[in-house]
Image (tube, rainbow, N blue to C red; front, side, top):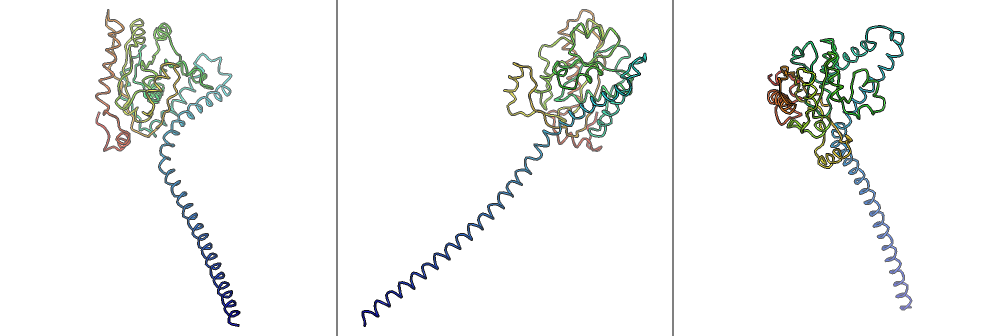
Length: 341
C-alpha cells in the first residue's frame, strides 16, 4: 500500500512538474514572440525614420543636379517655339526682312524675363559695344547662361544680333540645329569669323571654351592655354575686342570637384563634355563690358591675346569676390547686401 502511494505520488509530481514546465515553456515562447514582434516594429520604425533622414540629407543634392535640366527644357522650348513659328508664318518667307527676326526678339524677351526674375540680371557697359563690327570675348562659366542674357539684351535694346562661335558638339545635339541656325551659332574658322566681321556683324568668342566651362572653379582662373585664334580674327578683320565678365557666373552653376582630374583626362582624350553640372541657383548676376581694345599696328596675335586676357582679369578682380561663394551670391539679391560696383 505504501509502495503504491509512493508510486502514485511520484507520478502525480512528475505530471505536475511536467505541466508546470510546459506552461513555463509556453509563456516563454509567447514572450519571445512578443519581443520579436516588438523588436521588429521598432526596427521597422527605425528603418523608416532612417530612410526619411537619408532622403532629407540627399534631397538638396539631387535637386541641385536636376535644376540644370531646367535650362535644357528652356532650350527645347525655344526649339519648339521656332518650329511653330516657322509653320505659322510660312508665307512670310518671301519678305525682304529677315524672316526670323520676330522669333529672335520674342525668344530674347522670354530669356531676358527669366534672367531678371531668377537672377536679378543687369548689364553694365552695353553702350561700349561699337556701332560697327566688333568681337565680344568673355569668360566662360559652367553654362554660359550669362552670355545668353547679354545676347538677348543686345537684340532688344540695340536691335543687333551677336553671332556666336560655339563648340562643334552643339550642332550634334538632337533637335538643336534649328536653334543654332536661327541664332547664327557656328564652330567658326579664322577665315569664316573674319568674313562675319567684314560683313559688319558682332561676333562672340570664349577662348576658354568647354575646358574653362567644365574645369574652372570658384577662383575664376582664366583657362585659355595658348589659344590665339580670336586674336588672329580681330587683327585680320581690324576690329576692336570688347571684354566681358559676369559676376557670380560660377555660383549659378558648378561642376563637382570629385573625380575632376580623371574627367579632365577623359575630356582631353575624347573631347566629350561628360562632366556633370549642378546648380541653377538664383544668385545675383551682373555682366560687365569693358572698354573696346583696338589692335595696334604691328602687334602679334600672342601679345594681343595677352592684352585681352589682362583686361578680362581686371574685370574679374574688380567685380568678383574670390573665391566665389554661393550663399554670398544669393544674399546679393537683397539690396542692402549687394556688392558695390
